[in-house]
Length: 164
Image (cartoon, rainbow, N blue to C red; front, side):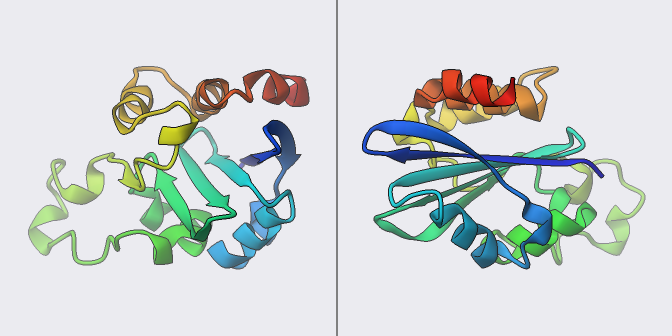
């Protein structure tokens, strides 16, 4: 699996970009500890695996607990990394499937749906509705989402520069 992770950190009104290595993080606490090393203000991390999903984690000076969003809740059971990092912070997928659902394409587990804090980027220019609209857009890959969300936050140019 190809995992890409990047964080944008705002300090005194200026954004900076930082690479992340989520593979080395034991859990969400370890990931957020690494993120907090990037600054004391707002830090937003974007993580994606094989263009399958986008995870967003936000920490801030006034936020003791991280806010977490996943574009597709199914990764909590299909991705070891997503399960390790985010399962404790998001609603459990356990018990959503029944024996009757195993052969049913309409089962809850086969449906892509976002999960987590939809409002985590509201003050950074992306409302809950806009976030849902972006992730539901046909052909929108996680990298495209990261660019769009960073642009709305005012960090698009610095992110583009960092990506080359």
